[in-house]
Image 1 (cartoon, rainbow, N blue to C red):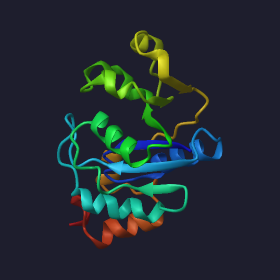
Image 2 (image 1 turned 60 degrees about the vertical axis):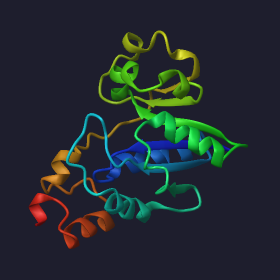
Image 3 (image 1 turned 180 degrees about the vertical axis):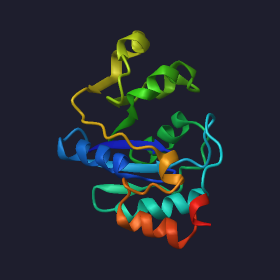
Image 4 (image 1 turned 90 degrees about the vertical axis):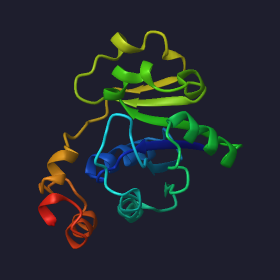
Amino acid sequence: MRIGVFVGSFNPVHNGHIKVVNYLLDNCYVDKVIMLPTPNYWDKNNLLDVNKRVEMLKFFENDKIKVDDKNNRYQYTYQVLLSLEKEYPNDELYLIIGSDNIKKLHMWDNINTLLRFKVIILRRDTIERNEYLKEYEKNFIYIDNFENINVSSTEIRKGNYNNLDERVKNYIIENKLYSNDR
């Protein structure tokens, strides 16, 4: 089985994230997707408690979408992939990233271990991939025809809920999760 691993802050999970997952499943790039919210990010702070983000992701869980709440203790993506490799020894793992991540790919911890796995890169914004990836291209699957929707998690946290699933919106409001709801 081909399993996509979608690691992110999901602060909060929005329609753009779900569109990525559905696109990869509907177009048979992967057979299943594991969504894993990280407890922290080296370049992000002020993340909502990981358990709240897991709860919001659970709205989308089904037989093809699994929310992983046990491997989010790892600090680095390569550690997550190594752990999942043990959990799914007979499956092929594909890391899912947006092309906006490739600018900093050379800074990812233990990049050589991470690149043992296949990496699906979805076009996002106007990032020119060739400029950044010359030395890493071996295991990359580029998806240039993905129609990205421009969603800002920052705007959502400020109260613009236009690109949220109704269940996530209600959860945010009911639990007063972001500044506008407190």
